[in-house]
Length: 115
Image (cartoon, rainbow, N blue to C red; front, side):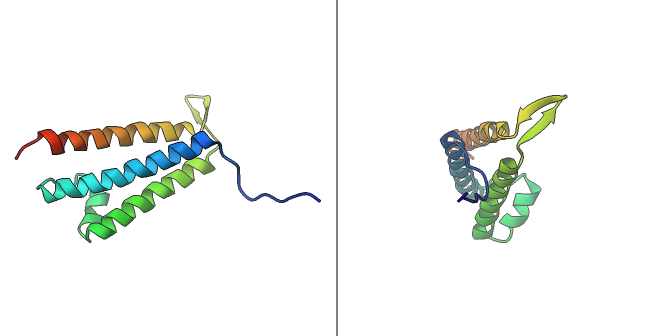
């Protein structure tokens, strides 16, 4: 008797990337709220909208949008950039680099920028 499988099986590396992206996204949300409390302004108009509805709404939407982007990346198997086939999962690495840069910038602002 054959087993029916729903979905795909992903590697432990993919799981590690996903968990790291989620951790960085949560860290970004926390650091953003800390910077806002120190007088900073949210420059992303979408997140600024949710920030106006409260910290919990901001945090929830940040998490939801991050999870949605992860799901989209998991659905994409291959994409074509400049007529070259690229694995969709390479977007996880790009996402990770961008989030790491954002968190580093926020830490710099918190530690070294004095108002």
